[in-house]
Amino acid sequence: MSNETKPNRSVRFARATATRPIRVVMVYLEPTPYIMALIDTLRRVWDGAIEVYYVSTDVSQPWKLRLDRAQGEVLPGGFLPRMRALLLALIRDRKQTVLHLAGWGHPVLFGAMLMAGSLRVPVVVESDTAAGRSDQSWRHWVKELLYPLLFRLPSRFLPGGTRQARYLAHFGVTPERMTVAQMTVDVCAIRRFCAQDREIMRSAARTRWGMSANERIVLFVGRLEAHKGLEELLSAFACAVDEEDDLRLAIVGDGSLRPRIEAVAANADGRIIYLGRLSSDDVLHAYLAADLLVLPSLFEPWGLVVNEAMACGLPVIVSDRVGCGEDLVRHGETGLVVRADREAELTSAILQLARDAPARHEMRQAAETLISNRTLADEARNIISAWDAIAQ
Image (cartoon, rainbow, N blue to C red; front, side, top):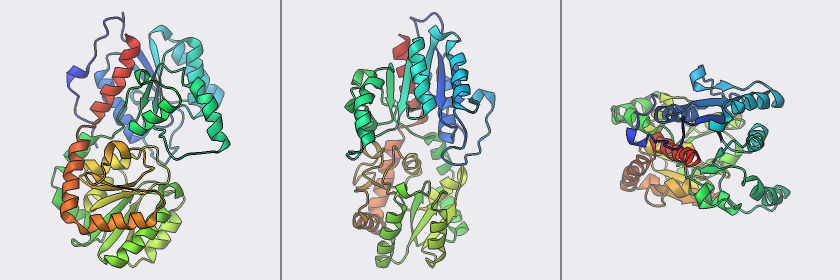
């Protein structure tokens, strides 16, 4: 997919107090399509230099992306070589530099935060960590003691949304130090793709994957891991399809549960279709072929597939542990929210949307309207406002 159209020049911010534009050093764990598209958008609207470094590649899944130098570079292997490379990047013109980190949990990100503090380089930290269920483990109590101290170091935080901001506030980060980023995907490119000829593409995708025109397709997109709630989804769908025979479950993704999903699909008489790992336009075709998306995760910091599905005009069902839920899934309006690990609730939600075509149509329109105001240009503007707050 192509990047978003160039944002309005009104989002280009003046820096009257700086003799030269601020240089931003960005550090991410890995290059992903979302991150690379966001960086491209930022480069188009930020006056200063942006240098991008990645700790590694293909960490969460085999993205197999090719990088040129303009898109960033991968740090050398090993903790000390990585820290040395970041030190060299920071001390170059450090008085005009801001360090932008994608979190703090990885040793390299944590080390970079401490190193920047010692160099008096301002730090901005993105966070998709969401406030969730209560935790009484030893890790919880370590965080309760250390995070209030650690979170004093960054100048600004960029929580992905409402739940992420609440998590930071719990550890003492004040609203004045937070700018909600509104995590998203390349919504404009997705909507352009879907606008070509939705019904023709929907019909072609269904034919390609052996789905008939009158079947109602429930879609899952994501890594095939236990924390995504796949076992709960399989059980809930089995109950739902007993009541509605023309329901089908399409699963897109790869991961450790792939053999399990392949085995279930092979013995499901066509009711469960495993599409494998799809990329680029093929994922969008899967959204267009479907009638609703289900993300029943037991743990999900954000859930960018929800952004993608809404941009394609799908109503969504999410668990209450999906991090984007409070910002994107308005219960009964853009989708439905169910409690995690409650198979009966998930079954009921699937049947409710599957049986009510008018409601799906209304939710589709509401989803498209809501997500249209959460583009990469919007996210870039929020990020730059955090950078600007430091530059003043």
